[in-house]
Image: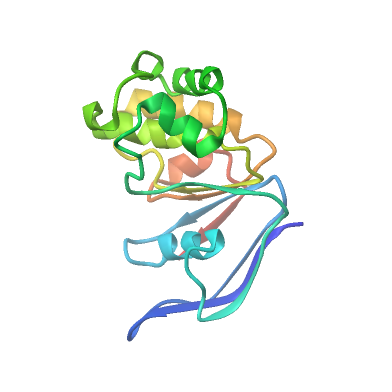
Length: 188
């Protein structure tokens, strides 16, 4: 079943953020949403995730769980990097360590998020979301704060781990859409 949004509208007070937005992403494909700040991209992801409801329109999702890489830090500060992944993904510590290796944080398993730079926190966010066994993965500016070479390596690994998942990527950078092999691009 495809991920389908039909005529989605959403306002916050007097400010209309989304008006009759529609998109369809076949199961296992990738879509990129581009647009200016304040254009409704994060609101759209939050509607897909079920965190907020649209004022009108329909949302149809494929069967299975949804994983979300939020734009802001949602790490649990009282848990180590390894424990953050275990808590979010329900995996064992050995699997969590493999995910930390994948995002080049293998030596940080016992470190706490407040010991991390912004880019390290973002990579831990990516690892947590990818470790969660989901049919759909939502990504809200997932690669921001990473230096160019590291960003490219993390995108390549993320692309690899997202095989056969439906992906919705929100970004300001069209090259990220290309590197993540997004088939559909929606501009807001």
